[in-house]
Image 1 (spheres, rainbow, N blue to C red):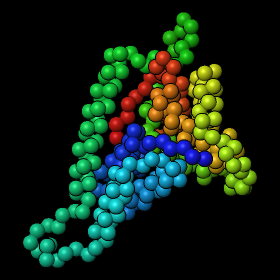
Image 2 (cartoon, rainbow, N blue to C red):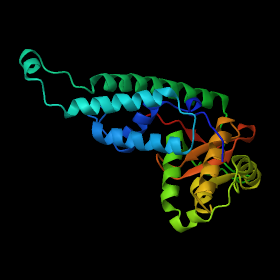
Image 3 (cartoon, helix red, strand yellow):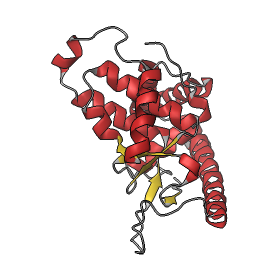
Image 4 (cartoon, helix red, strand yellow):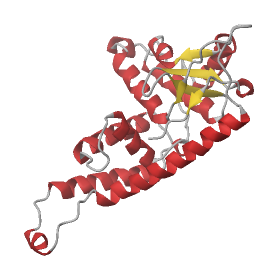
Length: 248
């Protein structure tokens, strides 16, 4: 299977760090650098497994995290401690994260305001003549998708992995299948797509197809509640469920 999706068009390394911080309810001013480095490298490993076109910034950030981690493990310099308080090795990274977080919050507010003004999002499947309760969905990040993908790989029985027909599943084929099903069903659970997969290659093909369709703006990913179950919707005429733009 050979198919590349450029991750750079989605989000960057600071987005991944903010995602991990929010997911684990970490204090951004006191980041457990060993834990966050381990999690970051796990996500990077998954991206490599998927053969994604990873921007160089992701690798630079990995090196930065490992450098900070090594500095944190060093004993304090007694000479510097006598003259002035030693700078926290995490300080520069924390500053960058805070600045980027503020930028994202402003961008998210403006995007949400524009959405309301243009009335892009409409209620999902309203009953004729009845004013239904809105289903509110949260915007899904590429890292939410990667988390779901990682869980799917863990959950698929290993004995299923052994029987694989080479190139039985292609990303192009999955793109066609997803669009065909969404025309009729309107929305699909990402988890259900993964659990129906015959082997890990079908899981990978499905995941890459979803990423590519999101990149092409053919579908949109959303979830009920932060870090909740992920659904994909057909982006036909931009008639989508009410969407809350989440800022980290």
